[in-house]
Amino acid sequence: MTSDVKMSNRPRIGLALGSGSARGWSHIGVIRALADVGIKPDIVCGTSIGALVGAVYVSGNLDKLESWVYKLNRRDIVRFMDINLVMGGGFIEGKRLMDFLRLHLMEDVLIEDLPKPFAAVATDLTTGREIWFQRGSLLDAVRASMALPGIFTPVKLEEQWLVDGGLVNPVPVSLCRALGAEVVIAVNLNGDIVGRRYLSRKQKNIVQSHQGSTEAELFERLSASLKKRTTSLISHLLGLHIGSPGLFDVLVRSINIMQDRITRSRMAGDPPNVMLTPRLAHLGLMEFDRAKEAVEEGRACVRRMFPVLQDILGV
Image (cartoon, rainbow, N blue to C red; front, side):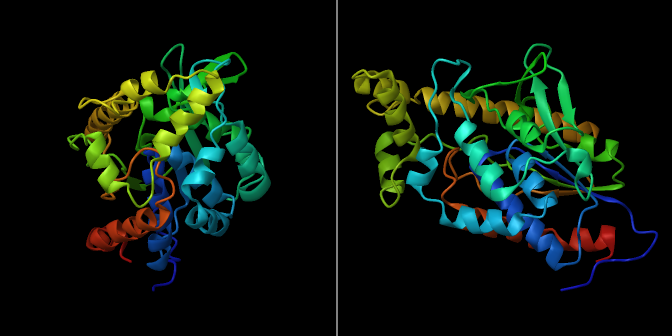
């Protein structure tokens, strides 16, 4: 392990944490591995799950988050899914999760009062504009940034309806630079997910026989909230009895494709100095209970790119 570089001419380092749902726990491993080699970012920006991890890190509570995610199991994840079909725009309200974050992982401080610059990205649902949260409520910024369309309900702040920042800026390199970063280390969670082969229900059962299906339990809760016997309909929507992708697969894969294409386009115009790409295509959208392998892969991707980090930062 090396000590932090103290030279006055050291460039300001920005860390751009990308979107990617359950794959986002790898951000914890990235932050840990960077610290192990003496790299502590001066600026942190995040989109979606990257906004959540980044906010917890900057507020000084990464230890608490890491301890919690290691204990997460499938039942815990389902309990956080507060189904609300009345509000529309998504079937998970997100209040239960945000209440937990407020009580156990981070206070709702003002972003401008954090010990180092932090910002999160959301999308204005009406105009399609990219919204940068640099001031105001930290929890509001995180909730808006991770409002995945069709899954989480949109967030209304003042006169704006906001959804997931991954729609416009999945890996916020540009935001890091706007906040003054001279060297940007970016974490792209979506680099290897497009082209992942669709698994039939039979294959999924084999893969998940030891852990069950979080997605299936989610839709069981959805069915219960409707108070109807809709098992057959939901099964067909999910593709559980047929060989084609179901509703959930189509939604998730469409978002993956969109974010991958947007990321490629934005990186071409404004590439980071170092790109870290955890190899986590095998993790599903809601598999937050597989934190240990995600965190370890975050560490591993830093090890793979260590020669580049050495060359650029001299660590």
